[in-house]
Image (cartoon, rainbow, N blue to C red; front, side):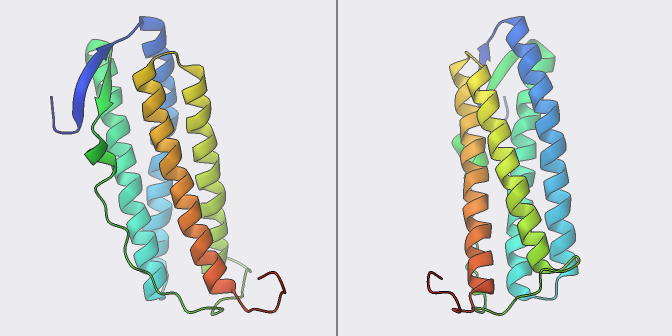
Length: 175
């Protein structure tokens, strides 16, 4: 067993098949998210946005790797791999200091549009993982999906805070 996996849990073949299908979808989406964040980190000239997107790309790589560990264990021996917490929670969020109200352009492929796309994608990923948690009767798999859902919710909150700061022009009474 590698350092990512705490233990292997025997599960019914039917459950292994269902989890395997979900893992394939999840890996595809995590890969797309990683590519999106890496591409936008390279494209932006804003140093704070570059740090934020770079951090998120690294987190998506961690999720992809954890999913790969689960997938490999299911394929090789039909067991569910319980991924160690440190495999998913060891990255430190960078300090970001966006300039308040600095960005207002939502047109085209700008940085704010990228943030909105990312927020939507993180919400969809969270909902997918929660749906997988609801489907399974395997407690270890449920915990894994719920943990991934929590990460996606944290990503959304992180992106939302950046979006809110960058677009805060204080011209709304509630803002």
